[in-house]
View 1: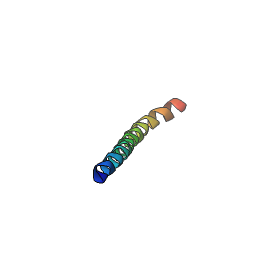
View 2: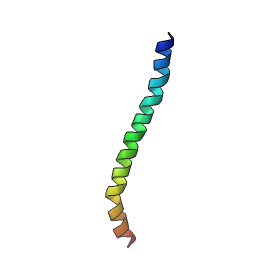
View 3: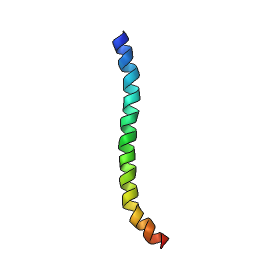
View 4: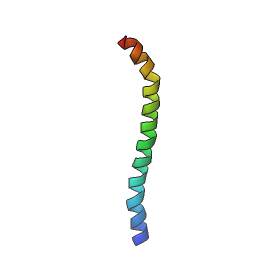
Length: 43
């Protein structure tokens, strides 16, 4: 019971963190792709 509850507590905390890391990576890549366009528009 303790092990199962431990997994139930740990997994919901780990998965959002993994998703946040993946999403932040995608956002960083998107920002890197968009920054040249933004700089050109800014100029």
